[in-house]
Image (cartoon, rainbow, N blue to C red; front, side):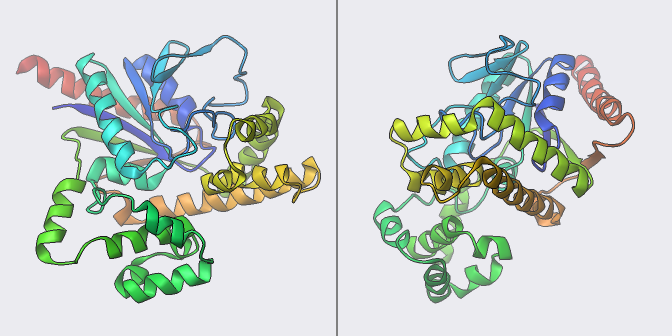
Length: 338
């Protein structure tokens, strides 16, 4: 059976750094699972470089065709989409499956690494609504509505969908627009639901070992704050200006969220001074980290066992490596016998 390793958790937990080490140990290649790292040009703000010690000019990394390479390890699913256009969960699952198949054909271990919970769930379990296409005409109308009006609109078209949404999703205009789009795209009947499930569920037939990384919130916040300063030093503001110069509107930048939403306000002079920028970035990413933690704690977010490791624990990396070694060796022994 195919083997896949997944490393996930909240932002600043050190997922990519650990995954790069494991890739060297177990002959692997990384597959990024991040809703914004897929976009060309969103490099510094999305943390495509795994930690502050990496510099854009230090020669330890390079860009290939469809991948980045760091210390000889390839990372796929970077730079696959135009930031001016929305790249959907369905697009991600379709493209990531192709990449994973190619990695397996090279007899290497695919290592899925990221913190976008919805993408991870869709990749490993499928989502019944993935195949419902984007209705751009409807979206153009809905995007003009306020948050309050979007909430009321969803309640009108599907009270059931509204009631199933968590607090965070109810405050997220993009999620509300998608929910309305899904609710109004087909007549909800048994046949339609069956077809949607068949088309949308792209499942990986493999043995997946899931490693979750966690840390006390105080430590995560400290890491986030350090990373904000590091990314500003690397040129995150300059990156945002370059994106705008190359045609990325401030409206679209805000839709991309997190760092880029705050940077859009800075470029429009709604934020005065770098210190205010830092403070707002830190607060927004702290809240995002809390949402990630809540997502991964929810049993419905991911089926199957997750092995959780506190990254502040003594020798945690060795413990992770030992667990993976047993899992990896068991499959190698079984394959040799059969």
